[in-house]
Image (cartoon, rainbow, N blue to C red):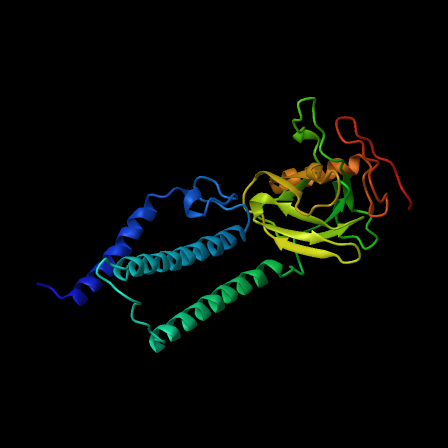
Length: 299
C-alpha cells in the first residue's frame, strides 16, 4: 500500500491538471472574470484592458484558494473536534502552537505585500502619461454633460476643433436617445492622451469597457494615456455623484480608423467649430428630457 505522504504528492499534480482542464472549457467572458471590454475571441478594447482584467482574475483566484483552505480547515476542526456523547467536562485547553501562529502571521503578510506589489505595478503603468502621444484630447465635464476638444499642433490653437454636448435625452418611455449623446472619437491603434477638466463640481470620466476611470476636479487637471486597440462604439458615463441629474451625464466613444477620425475632425472644421471652447460657458441651462437647451454663461 502506498504511504499517505506519497498519495498527497500524487493528488497535487492531479488537482492542477484537473483545474487546467476545467479552465479550458471556460468562455472568454469567464476567463476575464465577467468583465466588459473583450470580444468573444478575447480581443481587448485597449492596450491596458487585459492587464486590468488579469489583476482582477488572479486576485480572485488567490482569494478563493485562501477561502477554500480556510473553510476546509474550519469544517475539519468542527467535525474532528466536535463534542461527543461520551465526553465530560471541558476539552483539553491548548495555550499556543508556535508553528501555526507563525504560519497565520507570515502567510497573510505575504499575501498583502503581494497584492500591494502587483497593484502598484499596474497602477503605475495605468497612470503614466505619454509625453508624445499621437492624439491629445481635452474632455471637459459639466453638469450634466461633456465637451470634447481635439487639440491640434499649432501654438495658437487655431487648428483645435471641438464639440459640445448636452445631457442624455429621453423619450416618453424613458429610453435614452444614444444618437444625441456627446460622442468622443478616437483613432484605433494610435496612442491617446486625454486631459480631464471640470467646469463646476467633481466628475469622473469612465469608459466602461476600458476598465478604468479618472476623476475630474476644479483647479486640478488629470490626464489619462492609452491606446484603443479595437474599433467599435463604447458606453461612457460620469462615475461620481455630481448632482440631481448625474444619471443623465452619459456619453459614447467611437473608436474608428485613422481615415474616419480625420474625416470627423474635418467635419468639425467645416462647421466652424474651431479654437478653444474651454471658457465658452460654465454650465448648461438644463432642461432634462427631450428638447433640453444650452445657454452661455459668464466668459
